[in-house]
Image (cartoon, rainbow, N blue to C red; front, top):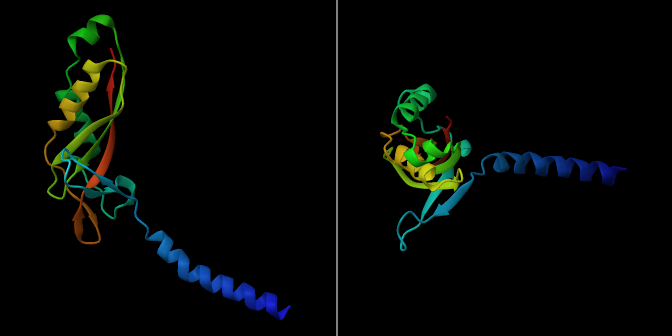
Length: 146
């Protein structure tokens, strides 16, 4: 019984030491942005202390997308609708880079338009881990509805 009690206390003490370290683990991926020579570590949006933010917040982002997005003529005439799921990196200077389509809408013109809209974004406020600005990956859906 005494051995079981010691083992239980030892296990609880070990967990008490390990759990805070687990909470500090960051989801960081390595990407190769447009260059075959350099790689950079990018933090995932949900795992930074301060998330990057579009000027004007979420409402400003929605307004920007709605004002900037132009329905491609070919897709409009054929009645093609869909959602393009894109990812991009908000750099340490707030600029948007490395725009990619994760899941297309089935029509290449909608995918290209989503990339154009995201590439035209102004600088974001930077994401931070502690007091340090870090590059952060953002995933954003762009909807095309008639």
